[in-house]
Image (cartoon, rainbow, N blue to C red; front, top):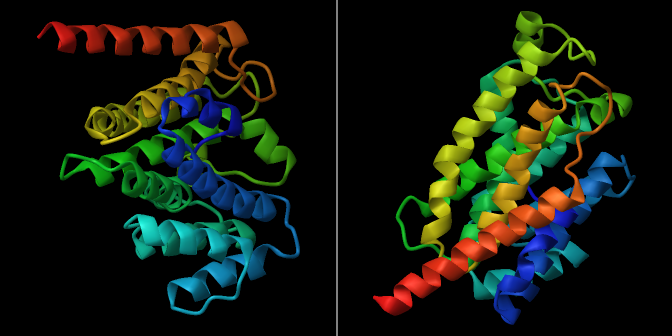
Length: 262
């Protein structure tokens, strides 16, 4: 769900104990994701160990140690962990994505589940908070996919649905504007729904607001760059990232001042 730089941008806004626990969750999930992406020989065994842990058998891997610590402190749903593992297996198997529904299911497994786990750690005051955090996770994963098309292709992976490619054409640089417009619109709709969770988080709303804004900015950068006119991974200029972070910190300060006056 979160890239390292985006993840770190506003993490210091969290209370110290939550910083530690969120970092542990992130490190656990990112480690497994990296092992899978790199086709590491240990990847399948480490995913196996997490699934065994869900079923009450602890094989003593770094990930199960983290899960033991976090599950004692927070109500992390086992189903979210199981679904994440299923997404990792989908990557290990190189399963193709046929339709938008299949892509949504994949995005749920590898990133929506992260939103659910974060909701368990940060807390939410709204009955739909967990579901909206899941939606935000899917929005971020769709952003990853359109941002990283060329990088993924170079590694033999394609996450765009076959039906979309049949309709709009293969995502060749300079000839993928229609496809990217469609995918960006789908991601934006998910952001509109998912970001409603942020003000209702018990903790970490400022951090999640900054992270979501930075992630969504990749979509705007793709548009500014001409919808994939040139090959390569989309990047946001550092000055623009700093401006977004400053904007959200200013908005938070103004909101705090209004509360004081009231």
